[in-house]
Length: 306
Image (cartoon, rainbow, N blue to C red; front, side, top):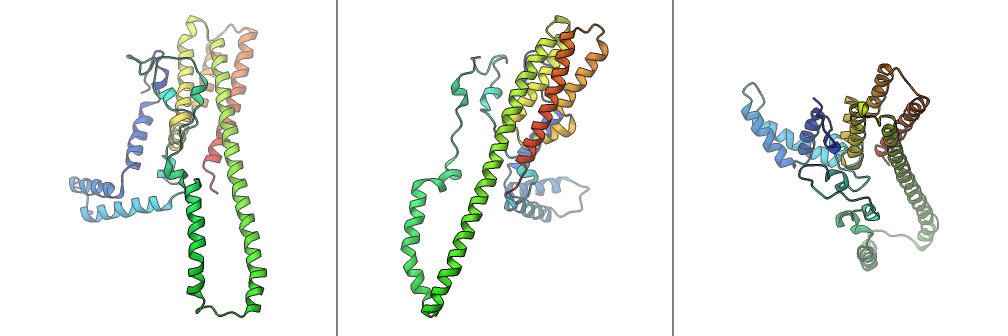
């Protein structure tokens, strides 16, 4: 069941989804040897299993190697569970309202926008030392490659000129076109992700303000807390959970659909509606449609392969 919280908004994700995701994320971090060892122990402990423990371990080892070797070529479970971050995760994971608080509550500052530096293994190839190493190595090895292939490839000077004047220039143009197209696709994808994530975050902020304005009375505190809890859960998913976690939450219980359900229930059970409340409800419905559209575009771009 869903855990009820009081101003503990950052710890309210539905427990069944959380438990399932925790198991899947822990499994995704296992190495091939760890997967083989676990499969061997499970097969030994299962009396009803007819599979040989050794064969089960080998099968698990090969499957994990296959999943790892796929890399980014296909969207597998391992790819879906890779962490992502549209903001600083510590700002939402360190809850100032816990008891005792994990951090002191401070107003937002520009320091919160600082990005975590990328790891060296993901950026070493764009550093100047690596590029200089490649340039010097290519320049140094080229004469030896020419001497090595000289007795093998015998071309007359006229034939060599024809090849160098046609094939080499065409290959250069083709490579440049391919590189420019690749960079254009990557730039457009990054731009679309940034645009839709910022649009979703700003609309969530506006949604929170309208919900507070709609349910400011004490008798509406329960429904306000329930709605804001859903928004807080979505913020946590967006900031520091994986794409797989968001897709699973969407399939099990779409948070924006749940807010629409709360609005429908509120309208059904409320008799006296003022013009202000009607206007706020219409604004919330409009914001939910914007959020769904922005989320759909963002998830599509996240799963888009080059």
